Image (cartoon, rainbow, N blue to C red):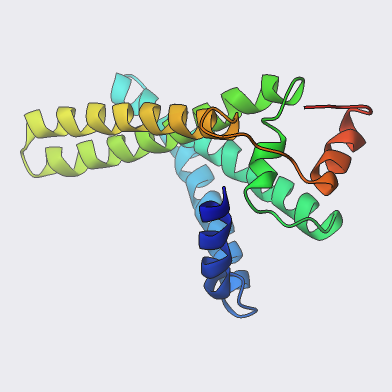
Amino acid sequence: MNAYNATQDLLRLIYRNPVVEPLVLASALVQMGLGLKLLIARIWRGLREPWAQAQVISGGVVLYFMTEHLIALALARWVDGLDTNFYWPASVMSGAPFTWYFIPYYSLGVIALFVHLGCAFRLILLRRGARAQARAAFWGMTLAGGTIAALIVAMLLGAFYDIALPPDWLAYLRQFVPGFAP
């Protein structure tokens, strides 16, 4: 957790720069808008083959994840004035009822990203005539996504070390569930 926060503090020098941050947020919103447009177009064209279904479902989950993530970021950081460091995701993984939503949320978000990337790699390889590698790339990315999702969720649940939430994050959670204790 200390390494996470130290790395994030270092990277913030770049991505929270007053010039860079609006560009990062704008590019994320543009990407989400383009993704929604492509999602709708693909649904209209039809989803007969399983690969198209995997691409659309995973893209929809990634879009949902990003939308929810950006809204939560804005509320925590700009409305509540909290530092959205390691304790931000760890706070909602510190106990029920939050974990009932956030374990599936983080798991599906990460897996969907890797499935979506796997669909892209599969298509690239198919266009190059590498049929066997295309299938392997898809399943390899999907397996990697499942593994990474499990590790992220386990980490945020405190499986590798104890996580003691700072008082400001406990107060934040108690806005939603009075008397909450991890």
